[in-house]
Image (cartoon, rainbow, N blue to C red; front, side, top):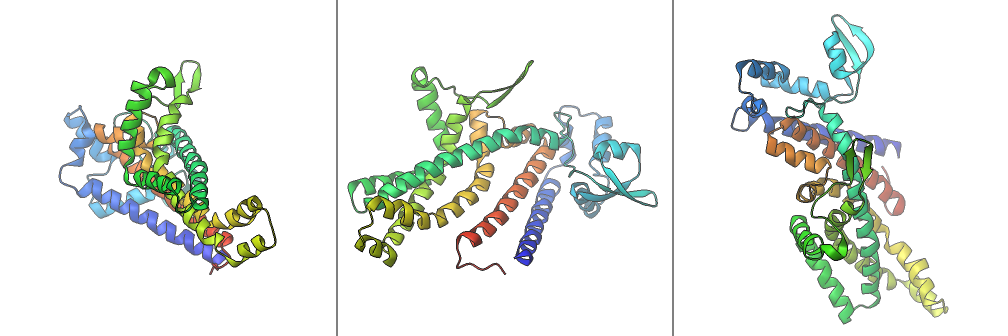
Amino acid sequence: MLKYILWRCFSGLMVIIGVIIVVFFIFHVLPGNPVDSLMGRDKSEENRQRIMKEYRFDQPLPLQLILYLNDLSPISLHLHSEKNRLKFDYLELLQIGDKILVAKFPYLGHSIVRGRRVSEILLEDMEGTIWLAVTAMLFASVVGISMGLVSALNQGTRLDTAILGISVFGISTPSFISAIVAQLLFAYYWADWTGLELQGSLVVKTEYGREYHFKNLILPALTLGIRPMSIIVQLTRNSMIEVMSQDYIRTARAKGVPRYRIIFKHALKNALNPVITAVTGWLASLMAGAFFVEFIFKYRGIGYDTMQAVTDKDFPIVMGATVMVASVFVVINIFVDILYAYLDPRIKLK
């Protein structure tokens, strides 16, 4: 088992490095001068030279990649200087000539527009994205499992057909379309009844601290949860139908076990294995899929930061957000693989 976990961690690390390299070359190789994009409104030669030096554009491209990976690595080698100590905020491990081996938080660079560390910006707004993804997943799980169970127990009826139709519609509708429709209906036409606003964030900074406006979480979470809910409906339905046809269920019926005990104690418990795997896997996908939903609702999170950074041409934030989301996605998928092996005894960890 330990060997399997170590292998999955190594594979995940290779995926993250691959994403980093792809993002790096997209940023540096696409047509157009990245320095012009990073300069913003200040087009002075002094600003150009500062950016060239800060982002190492005066260095050969392979060396830029090596230095970028070195900045991202938790264990890295840097010149021993007060400037680097303040820049990376590292813990000294070993002196090697004029350089020093250090331990540090991965350095994602500084925002051009905001003038702050990219890691600080993303970690500050990650709370909103986590709240959104978890709430959407809870909604999708509770409603999806309930509807799937009802559909399976009423197989072939009009109710079953209606639930399947709803799930197909939910799967085929993009999240940004659902977001716009939800805005119009619940926050515009029916705003007097719902009390919901067209746009707003969960966490709002005030002069007295941070305030939480949970009503601003409702529409983004419902919108983001529609697609996974629709998939969970079909997974639960198909899994329940398969389990209900097993021999041990027929034996329980023959022994006179009450129907509700057969459904909830025996059938549903075994039918939820693929559903649980889908739920944990979708949690990572929702963090990535929240980008457009957050932007439409102006809901502060990693997705909103990234979309705003694209608009402002603040590419260090775009690169940092991509690396961070990819890392979260890989970590959650490793956890899902291990969890699934525990839930399904037919799978052996090797």
